[in-house]
Length: 155
Image (cartoon, rainbow, N blue to C red; front, side, top):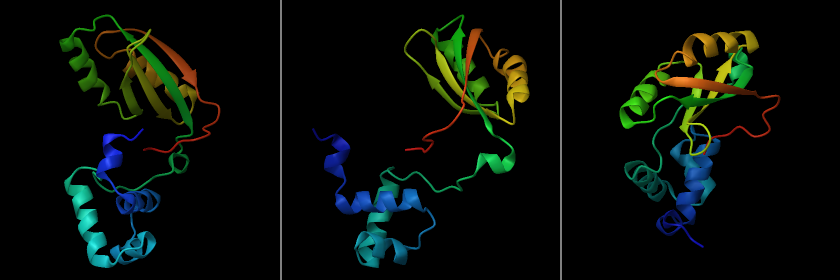
């Protein structure tokens, strides 16, 4: 079964995206060689993929361990109020916590799942107690500590 995206992107578009996910610093010359197109058509496709929002930007990929951020924990967060205004307040406040790497609203027995990266369990405990638990409308949290990351790569 094909998705709408499958019908909009052809094999060259996919090759361009895959190559840039692997190495976002490829020159247009190297990219065109890698995907099997000449430079001009490759550049036109790249600009179209960017203009249409398939490629939203380029950034440096960092190794958190080099920054002393080896500890990952996931925190389930339950809110005391889930009306739209409360959700908006929580969303705005959680974005300000540097240690929260990801925040997802969840359909289930809790409201949000946070991925939190810190130096160690002691620092996580401080972030949980001082920052996360103090977020608007938080009624309870539950923590799951990562023992090993088997696969950790974005889309």
